[in-house]
Structures are given as structure tokens and as C-alpha cells.
Length: 470
Image 1: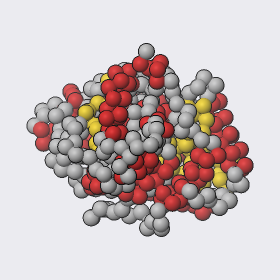
Image 2: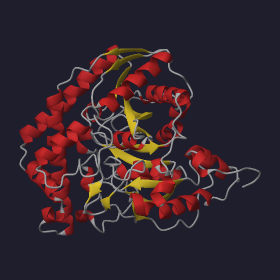
Image 3: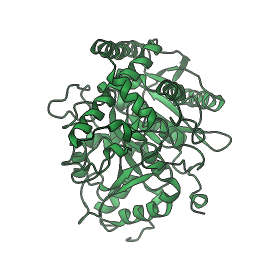
Image 4: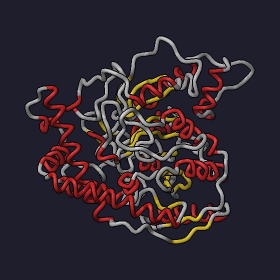
């Protein structure tokens, strides 16, 4: 590198791309480093489950020129690349074409290296599938990195990647971000397109985006990926200006409604975040959104079950698999059976419950700019605690929902939300803090996140990777 010392750990994705564009490093410089880190750390973390063949050439232009990127093992197809959704049922599935989001990421200059570990069919808050095996948290290898984007979050926390592509259907970006001490934002419903092969994910609740070390990387990625695809069934409010610009623009004094719940560490994290927000000039008061929590919970289960059942049956028909349930983990096979039994009337009732949550959150954000809460109700638990092994689908779902009871309403309502790494327990385990905003208000979240990042920097707080490789 010309006249400069390059520290991979000290650079975010935008900084890496700037060096590539200016010719300060070779186009494949950061790709080589990322591959070396995957080779060194993945045997312990099991974060990466597919390795893509090397690119013939690397981009020297684009917002993310020459930046390595891992994609989650579900949600964003790439031409001729595997995408198995963490299940034997999808073994040998290869995408015939780029998805719209994949094409936009490619145009931005990213170098795709592979896919990250996710639980079977992305149906868990822990990444402990039988097909790809267990992913581990780099802060403590006996703990879960979360799910369903567990491999993605572990890769960023461990310093393998500056950012990763992810998806979120109930908290699957935000929960792993919270457990791994990194930043994760779920955009508004279909701010990022899911097509063209898929119109929407799980009744509009599934949302694509990223986990990153820096706030500005997340904002810059959303700048290059957002925008409706042809024929999208939903539309997010128009974007004014750049999300990246919002990060460096401190917000006005905000009215923040706060809910404190969970274990002692999660409660302490919210209280500390509230104190920081007040120090920054915002007003914080106790105020919970008034939506029917039990109705949202049951609606999420119903809608997810029907969508999983439909996807499973369609793939089995396309691949001529006589008994697809035999290829699934028992708890997920039961989930498919549950979906098979849902009537059209009950499904429509569940969709209506999701829409009612949109009304309720809309009313809440008429009174408050931001909703502050813990991301999860407990710190990252030991491996096995959130696994579905040996449980009925109802038992598994109760444990799943209790782990992060406040995140899914943002999927149900379509509103954006983020997990910010502002706190660590006395044992050194990350504790995420959750901030939500009104539908279409990602720019406000990025402004607040940028302000919080400047006031309480987290990027240099890393797990000890020498212990992982020892």
C-alpha cells in the first residue's frame, strides 16, 4: 500500500472501497484477507457454509468496490451459486439468475465470497441446524450468535467481514446483532425488494438488509439497494436524500417512548441507553405501544407456518420428492403440518391482525419519534437453550418468542427498527439495545445511530480471536 499502513480491523467497508478506487491497494487486496480469516476462524465459528469460486476480476469502481461480502444462506439468489436455506431439503439448489437485490449488490462493486450459516428454513433465534451444524458466538463459543442470521453476525463480530447481507422476519437481523455486539437495521417493509421470483417474504414480514460494524456501512448499502422492483405489491414512502448523509446529521431533540423488560442485563442496557439519549438532548419517558401482543404472536405463527408449508410443498413438487418432511428437522416438519391445516379464513384473520398492528404502531409514532426497548429479553444463551430438538412446535415457538418478544411487531407492522451495540454485561457478553421508528423513517434511525455511535463508540470493542484459534 502506497505510503499508508493498512489495518483490516480498523477499516469499515466504505473505507476499504475508497482505498481500492484510489489504487492504494490491489482490487483483490481485501478479498484475500477475508479469505484468510475465513480459513483461520471458520473451523471454530462455523459461520460460513458455502464458499463461492473466485471472481475472474474485481471491481475498481462502485460504492463498495473490491469489498468482500458474504450473503445469508437464504433470501438473495445469485446466478449459478448455491442457496440451501440451512436444510437438506434444498441440497444442491443452485440459483438460475441473480435476484434484484443480488444484481444491485453486484453493481455496487462487492466481491461475493460465499454464504453464512442459518438455521433450517431460517426459523429460529439460534443457528443450530442439523444440515450445516452449529454456529458459535465469537464472544463465547459456548453461546449462540443468535438467529436466523447467526453466521452473518458472527462473521462481522469476529472481524472476518466488515459487513454481511442478512434478512429479518421476526428479528433475525437484530437478535444476532444484539448477541454479537454489532449493528443491525431492519428497513421498512419492502424498502429493499425481494423479487423478481418472490413478491414478498412471509406475508410482507420478511425484510432484506445487513449486519455491519459501522452505522455508515449499513446506510450506504441501503442507498444502493433500496427502491421498488417492477410489480412489487407494497411500497415504502419515498426517500428524501441519502441514508448515508443522515448518519452524519444529528437528529433534532427526539421524544422517545421506552419499555424496560427482560433480564437484569437487558434492563440495565436500556436504562443506560436512555441516560445516554437524555445526555444527547432527547426526552425519554416510559411508554409502551398499545397493540394486541397475543394476536400478533399467534398471527406470526400462523402466517409463517402457511408460508413454510407452501414453500416446502412447492419445492418437493419441483424436485419430485415424495416425502419432503422426512428431510426436515422434526420440529420444522411439524410446523409444515400446522401450516397445511390452516384454513383460508384463519390465514386471512392472521393477516388482518398484522395490519391491525400497523395501525397501532402508527398511532404510537404519532406521539413518539422513537421506541426504545431491549432487543432481546436475555443475553445470548448457551447453545441448546433455543434449539428445537426434542420440542413440539408449540413448545419451541414459546421459547423462541419469549427470547425476543418485542422485535416481531416491527415485521408485522412494517416499521423499521435497529439493534445498537451500546452495552456489555459484567461477563463481557454483548447486549443490544432496540430502537424503532415510524414506517419509512429509516433516515431518522440512521441519524440517531450515528449520534449514538459517536457518543459511545463500539467498533474497537472486539472478542479475543486468539482464544478462538488457540
